[in-house]
Amino acid sequence: MSFKIEIENLSAWFGSKQVLKDITMKIRENVVTAIIGPSGCGKTTLIRCLNRMHELTPGSKATGKVLLDGEDIYGEGVDPVTVRRRIGMVFQKPNPFPMMSIYDNAAAGLKLNGVTDKRRLNEVVEKSLRVAHLWDEVKAELGKSGASLSGGQQQRLCIARALAIEPEVILMDEPTSALDPTAAAKIEQLIRVLIADYTVIIVTHNMQQAARVSDFTAFLYLGELVEYGSTKDIFENPKSELTEKYITGEFG
Amino acid sequence: MISLAYLALIAALIPLASILVETIFRGLSAMNSSFFLEEIPPLGEPGGGIGPAIQGTLIVVALASVMGVPIGVFSGIYLAEFRQARIASVARFLNDVLTNVPSIVLGIFGWTLIVVAIGWSVIAGAVALAIIMIPIITRTTEEAIKLVPMTMREAAIALGVPRWKTTLTVVLSNAKKGIATGILLSVARISGETAPLLLTILGSRFWFSGFTQPTAALSVAIFNFSQSPYRLIDWPRAWGASLILIFIILVINIIVRYATREKYGWANT
Image (cartoon, rainbow over the protein chains, first blue to last red):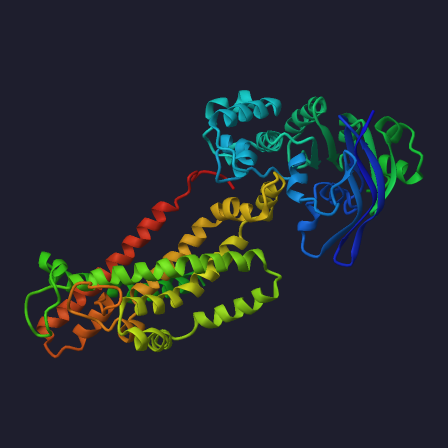
């Protein structure tokens, strides 16, 4: 199994506060990797470093390397815009563009990047909405506002929007934490389907979710990578006492 | 407490309502079709109209907007998007000062800068009014853009949209209602400005004859009519011109509201 992303000695700061401390880990291709840990442990910062969203926060800083297919995305002359086209992101709170229709939301990545070919847009919109398991629910009302959908549908629309630019990796930052259990279950099923074509990295504070959905799990605590291994090992046979305590709910 | 607030509201509405009622009744009595279409007669002379003043106000305000709106909107975008830049805080401070500069001072400025060089003219008036518009538009644009949630920006940036393009598309389309409101406010404000126009466009009784020539304007005409000793002939004209000025501002309001109405009024965000 090959590695899609290799993180080497990654540290990150907000101002003078260090939130990630020397993280090194290799993420495999076409699997789901879950990042777990208590609030404030740096899990969100970690994935935001992987598509260079971290640097958008004023006063933030990151050092180290993140290799995507062997190439450092922090290397000199690398445009963060091209990185983000290869590594898509789904956010904690569903955030469809409220001024756009369902169709335009799904097409947003292409349209905003200058694609005007109607036929291609139609194809991509249908394909990504189908992959996101939303097509059958919205195909009759593509002109309606993306904000008119339910929370779960909005999140699947956001996944479709991320898929439409055909990234290789999809980062998900607690994608179901704002959703009810039924809507969350649909997203979890979808994640398992996505790994046929994509590499998925999901941040979650829900350990059952990590156990259900992921193949590998990384446990972060106070900005440090405590343990990383197959989900089975982490949950059934943790090496670190800290991991065991967190998983059994002793803290967090 | 609530009844006090209610009383205050009534007290605030009384002058507003009486101005409107007074202007409508007195203004309407001055109106007939020639009032809109004919040139302005000398003071005290019956007949004629205020056609050139309506035309002049529209031309000067339009030209001022052509200059002021893009400068104001783009300055506002800059201030909102580059909040930390050192120049931003200096510009923001100067902008706030400029907002509070009395308009007569800007009239003197336009007079010194342009009138002395090319004479009383539409251009000089438009420049003076544009300078009044710019700080208002800059401020409201900045505030409108700041209100666009960060999640919206991040959604676009995470799709590999360059930052500047994110601003010009997603951010602006989310902020356009606030920006349009700022533009509207400033247009309404300059439509009624009188002091800077007296010093720059001078006023005229005749139709528009070029951007480097003096021109009439409603506010200047209202001022001139009200100074007339022939109260029976000229004062109704002042009310008529006032009513038209209010009407123009009302129409601008309606247009902007219509143009920026929510495409999805029932959207829950």
